[in-house]
Image (cartoon, rainbow, N blue to C red):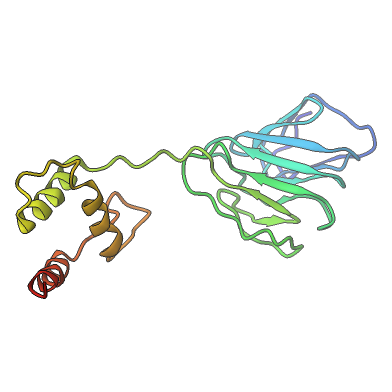
Length: 209
């Protein structure tokens, strides 16, 4: 099935079926209201496939059926329109971002028929009861130069010249744990440490001994 250059709505009810839908131009909608559980795979922006073998492209807006719908997003893929899990919060409808390698968020649950927000779904979401968080965010590598600099400052300031980095491992992370001034999850700089404050208080502890 190929749509026109304008806005098209493709409605599936009962036992309706098709192999391929191509939205073509316009702001297009797919209403897949079959009485069955559905798994949607969003493999490209505004495209993918759904239970039963139907594949689609150029579909900005999706409405699921009256039973359970799971929407699985390939990494960084999404929709430029509205995604509605169905028509009621009594359904079990899930946004699944497990394949994402970056942070993804959703304003639902709790479920609502009022339009909410979700990552890479520009037109918003409705009737979503579950949210599957990203499962493939890579660990941020430690900046070796910064690590060595911090370790050196700790060792030098306390006269631990004979200690290796491994010997000071616990102290190193104790400093980080107690003196984090800033956490910025959107950049490569994750913390700054108030060394002057730390060393001043530690020296005062030593002098009190």
